[in-house]
Length: 232
Image 1 (cartoon, rainbow, N blue to C red):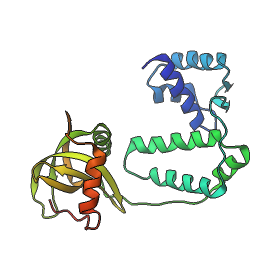
Image 2 (spheres, rainbow, N blue to C red):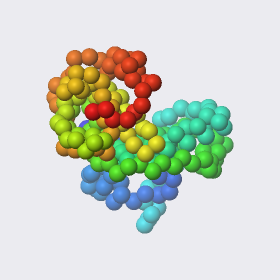
Image 3 (tube, rainbow, N blue to C red):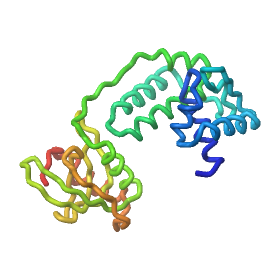
């Protein structure tokens, strides 16, 4: 990681904490030494970032000069908060952390009276998800983003096991389960796969031969009105 990228990551971490955060916590989050944290804090200060330091408590970002103000009405703020709060419940650690980061960025660019509304919002979303390997969930998201084939073992509704090679292009979050929409090479057709039934997943380095948007449109035409029940 270059130093400039590390400084941006440090600045974003400081945005996430409303109260002082210690150099030890920052070092652990950034996977660097505490000495590097102190140096980076001074670098940010030299660039005009207002960071307070309190002995025994840590560092706190007091104002953010990089982001422009943003105007959102009350309903827009509640909508964004509710969506981000729901995202924190999804069994995917990277998305959990991203929701916290986005919320911090949102708080940083809102006028003070809107920040108060964001902090006082009591809307909540609750989901109970079937147990799933969170690392696997993230791998599936990455494969969709990268448009690469994936391999995994799958157990269907009738407890039949099979090995699959698929072209992943969409994820759906249905009540208690996450479902992957993909083109299955074994069936030569679109299939839906529940992530809680996948095992031993690995990413290929091979791009699949169509754009994911095209696959999504084809699947939408064929599958959107059908049940999400496995037919694997």
